[in-house]
Length: 156
Image (cartoon, rainbow, N blue to C red; front, side):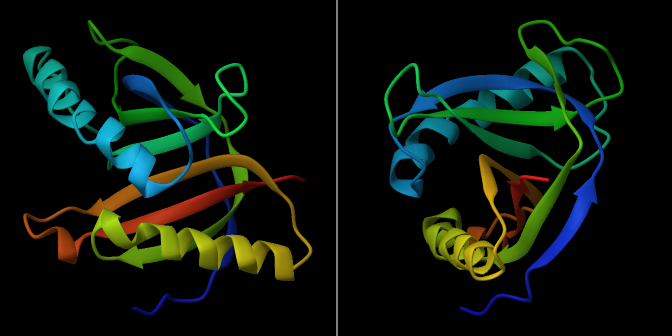
């Protein structure tokens, strides 16, 4: 698998609605079983509310040190044009400067993309804040054809 060049960019703040849960660590092995079941519930609640989506799904991850040293808070979200949706948390994801790489393929192989991105950040003397986002750009039926942008928030 190959990855296009890593880039840095500023991403704007966005209002999203979604669900959250805790994973034991930031690995796909730990996050996958947590986030996978969240999406059918999220889509069902959005559909029941008749909510229009205004962009691709964004999963984002924040440290959860109150749970354990390695724990991660997992957020499955969508940007929407309304202030709230019944049963979902509304969050303002702040603007950030990020290091970004595009991952082609299933989530089962995404850890390699994260490793590439973290190595690039280190080699360029930058510091990641511990916050990460996944923007699901293309999600066809065949998960091997998925296109996901991975973003690591950088300290400024």
